Length: 316
Ligand SMILES: Cc1cc2nc3c(=O)[nH]c(=O)nc-3n(C[C@H](O)[C@H](O)[C@H](O)COP(=O)(O)O)c2cc1C
Image (tube, rainbow, N blue to C red; front, side, top):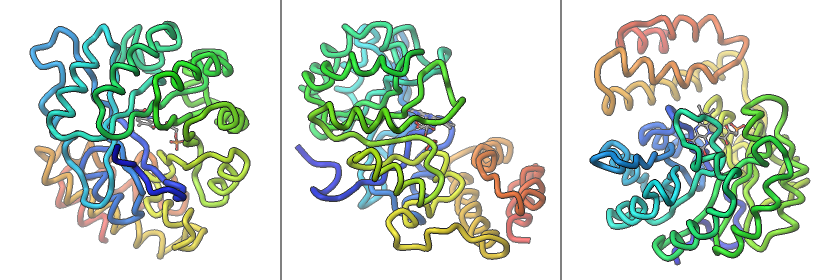
């Protein structure tokens, strides 16, 4: 089996984020903060559709960045054809697969898929065992603490172990909680102690001191960073200590953001079509950048209706 990270490393992973972590975003993040592992947005298995996986999802699933392992995240249930879909992905060269068992958004998932897994825990082990036979690299699960009870996950952990998953990513909020409240990493610490596989902690890590605190208090094998990396792609380097742990402010921060956002804008112009779509994708990133002292400038960038205007405002 090809490992996802070398023994002894504490891997820092870029989270799967629907609408954000497309192939260009992953490439820009890889160039700036150098995450150890990157994830696709979730690939939805579409039962009954002509193509169970959309062509655009295959493009994303195969778009690797040299030197940075890519994990393809799938969402779907065995009944919906997720096993056949994963076989197709593997046939096209995908190595590492992650199953989303925590997504709270009903419209994008189904009764059985994503966070719905908690309603049907008996389906978990058979599905993962079948996937274990197919996936040549790591098989992992990303989940939340429960549907509405933050201890629900504990009942499912033995099924993960029986199926032989390689690692589990835990975002310690319930599905019902969506993004309210705080991620409760004390739950991650408990899970780490009770399972035989590696656990990756995820949720609310916005800066290097918080990353250190979560790693120290949970003994997790690694960290997954989502929104914190969207607002500061250098967060991985800050956590490693290869860059200042403090995010700069003022002119320095603005210059860094301008470089980051310009790279994204130029990249998005290559893979998306038309100014409206390109700028909509950029605005999804801008929505996560909340530096108070940059708001006036960023508001100007958000207002741009043409790519050349956005570029000028970024650099102006
Ligand atoms: C815009 C957005 C899209 C997301 N899409 C996905 C997804 O496709 N798959 C998934 O497992 N989690 C998804 N998540 C959840 C994140 O991967 C992560 O678990 C969550 O944001 C908590 O981590 P953070 O506090 O570091 O952002 C998404 C989160 C956001 C903000």
